[in-house]
Length: 460
Image (cartoon, rainbow, N blue to C red):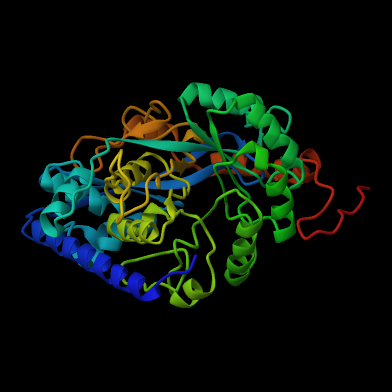
């Protein structure tokens, strides 16, 4: 694909200006808010996976935070890792007495800032952003209150109770159960647990088990080299994969060059969360003030589908998707480890940033290409529980409903936070279980070679 870089530069300039105008309008709407933060309550949790996620983890650390205001409004945040008691007290001291819209503490509030934006407006965040965007920039965004997802799946070892195991042999039947329970129309396989050539047979068995109506996408997480990727993808053309994400590893320059070549050799589309298209200085992220990497854009055409993270925020996310659509890329969304608060944020940000109008019957001579949106990735299906009131958000027909209460539309449950509260003893038990899994991972998943390509040494 040969891009007109001048046209792209002009379009990006216009998109950034539109999002800056929307940002200013949000600031104007919130500037007069009398709210003041009176408390910041941190809730560290240790959330177990269903089963054990390969040799990656048995449970993961998160911290939920409630920012309480003098008017009783509460904004909620979620982030990975544990905030210690001293760190929690330091956060409290930095934010108490300040407005939740004070720019100096925006980074401290994280997602809670956007929760407050919607709550002060008295609207679900996505509805507020859609309406304000149309008012400020004159652009209509169709409202979607439900968003489809692709559940991540992987090889699972048993959990501490000996449950949740998924193996090479049981993987197809496991996926059939996942589809049946959630009504999913697409599944995602993390394809790093077995040597690459073994996925040829596994993918064929999965297709046979699921039938033709379920889309299958795969993610090697950059664990294959160019030869391995070409061999596997050529061999499974008949499986009709929806796409492969980040098939080739290495430095970004290597990834871009080799993935462009791969796209000329196989028919499977490629998605990427570094070629969004690429941005500077850190390709893979895309704040509003980050310029596009026009040097790489002039040299390569490295992906078919853009897979950014929602953590950049709804305005920067919309810029990314608008640019992707302009250059003819499809749009999906990368998933990190998210519990309910971050999932709610993803839902609102995506409902604002992704949908676009398309004439259902007539060819169009300008505007975006039809059919550019793909279901979003998620790990949420793999968690044992959540800290939300009501527990995990229910999957409805293979997707999640966008919460319809003001702000993010979710709140935290004290009993569930206590159930999954972090403790040193729990962390030690999970860590010991993970050490045992790592000691036998390569043998139980059938690896003959080390990841570097050499054969593994004989076992004594």
